Image 1 (spheres, rainbow, N blue to C red):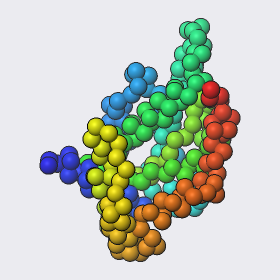
Image 2: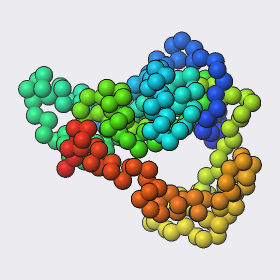
Image 3: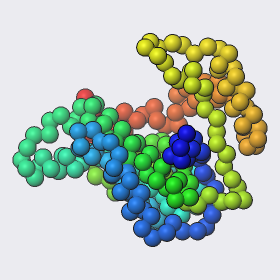
Length: 249
């Protein structure tokens, strides 16, 4: 155990923020930390966009099914999978970019964006800030792209609410699956039912303490994957990705 590991284990999703603004220079420090994250072949196929405009934030919150913290947080970022730079570089250099429409470049752009954002999250938490990711921006990627003026071959991977946690509405650390469910040695092994049952009990206790619906993990997870409606529009994401110019093959 050390300070870094302790900080990682203390991570929590923060959805309630104090009104204090993020200090000057913080954004740039977070982006510097993000740029130090691993990136596939040093291609750096991600970008990040700040959103301050109240009307735009309100529209993004509506896409995210009414997540008001998008409107309320002091700093809102949108992390982007960005292949447009490579496409533009090819045009400028009269070089082929025939590999860009394939699935692999899109995958490493998504991974690059996620790694960069997580570096930023570790950095912001070290400064006493809190945050929560907003994957629900993928409910309607084409509308998000319109609102943010994204060029072809750029897609919003997720939003990121950032600010000082409101001490009157503290967030707790949500328990995770036990290690013997996610850690495999040499060969993959299916989780034991007692391990899942035990986690259901732990998460249900957490949900009850937070005033949430006490459903445990299994019921919640199965409802999330139980039908197309649970995808909240993301069942169309392949078509939307191609509409945004990626034309995946």
